[in-house]
Length: 374
Image (tube, helix red, strand yellow):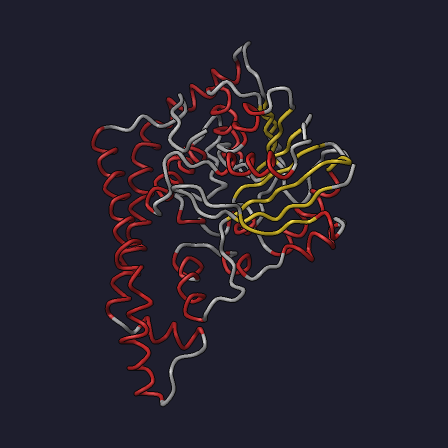
């Protein structure tokens, strides 16, 4: 299922709102393909020589590189524009979401009450989303991932889906790209014998990855979990609008209430870079607990790995930590999932950590995978 799929739960943007969103995509593409791509050359030709002339040695440590680059007007210009583009992206998306939120809430209520309803939604009124989600608006998303305006409000999920798509297009990712499709191809190649009866999508956000599993495995019982009530309301309504049977639950990926050995396939998509070391390790332990013999867990994420990179590249990639409200960006970049999967209980010969082959218009997505012998 492609990124650009349409359905009833998408906010109905006006022509002006669409134009502003398209402008933001073009601006982000220009910043990424133009100014950002020249930062390495700027450092080598201008910033590093100037720093060495002043200090008697070239900038070698990341903080030295950061100080030198942030004093350079050309870098200041790119960084300010990149931050402004991200802020304006959420303004452009928010205009349509908050104008249309009452219609979306009514439609969500209708889908939930329909006798043809395929899945379900279970929220926990006593659940408190973790501070790592509530203390900061991740990606600068308006109201954050845990935004909950009550009733059938779905604003958080609508913001996430539309804003996430614009962000991806601005990075040059194709409109036909699908992270779940990449993982499903990986499953077909690596685990052709796997015929899951129960599937769990951890950290499902707006449910855009959950739905393709329900459609690809129509005989399977598909569950999806996240911490945000508004996000889950949207995900549930979105799945119903697309004719997919998915059961959504408000749970923490590191501490679910499912019984032992309940699932044959567990997946997550772009979750690892949004959670702490402790939560990631807890998610791996929970994956091991929940898998049946013969089951597989595949945790997919962005190919952000600091191992072997130069200090300049680490500095460049750390921009999102400081300027895009990504508190766990570098935490993820420095982690080593293989020993963590072993510590969670997966055998050494039942672990795969690496990158998926990049398709046209996609990133070489990273996966941390563990399985249990039948």
